[in-house]
Amino acid sequence: MATIKNFDRKGGFKLDGYKEIIPSSKLKESQHAELFDTLVAHTDLTQNAEVIGNAELIMSKSGYDDIIFSMDLVKVLPKKDSVSRFLIATILQDKKFKSHCLGYVNGTTVLHLSKKALPEYKLFLPSDFSTLKPLDEVVTALYKQISSNISENTYLEELRESLLPKLMSGELDVPDTNL
Image (tube, rainbow, N blue to C red; front, side, top):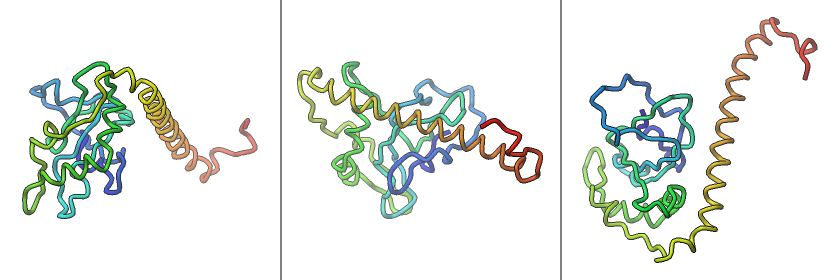
């Protein structure tokens, strides 16, 4: 399950924030998230609202088959197929969106983002979405490369964790390996 613990206070999506759960059979399809879906934090436990209104793409499922997101998060998808989810994520990661959200925060102990915040945010997009195609292609390629790098880093970390104990115990000897 993706939760607000996945949201780094300084920005970014933390993979170690996933919470392992046994999902209920009553879950709706809309409560599932896919790779490259954008999640927006709607709750914050700090009074500084460091996380609330942050928009982050799911860049890795960290080996899980299914990602469900908590009620502290909202999934944002483009209404039109001509606008990519990568472009929407980029727009929502702008400081203007964060500032807009901070104007919709309420609560004393736990801060909540009003349900009006997202629908009332005005995206200034051209009437002809094809003009965004070059920007979209660059942003899409960058996000996909970042995701690929995350997957490779995860694989290398797992490999290191499996090899290190064998090296330390002498079970594996470096001169015996073909590097």
